[in-house]
Image (spheres, rainbow, N blue to C red):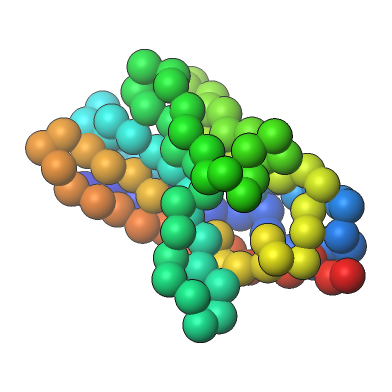
Length: 116
């Protein structure tokens, strides 16, 4: 089992920045991918960014160049640095971990609100 605890959400004006953190605990050696998803009201949950165990990163087209995912292996923590935020980035952001054998874990979610 893997437990994920997110922090760092909040309210920010358009153009501002926020950094989300996700601390993993439990069977962390089994984790192959960690990432961030988001879900806006009335919309499906979507991938924002993810980082593979080897360090490769993927980004949604809508955030590429503005968001950056990174990790601190010693702290078992993944970060999402969000710059140049837009009102359309408003959503609940969820930390995600996928392990081998395949199991999917979710954090509780953290609200990000960007005002115009």
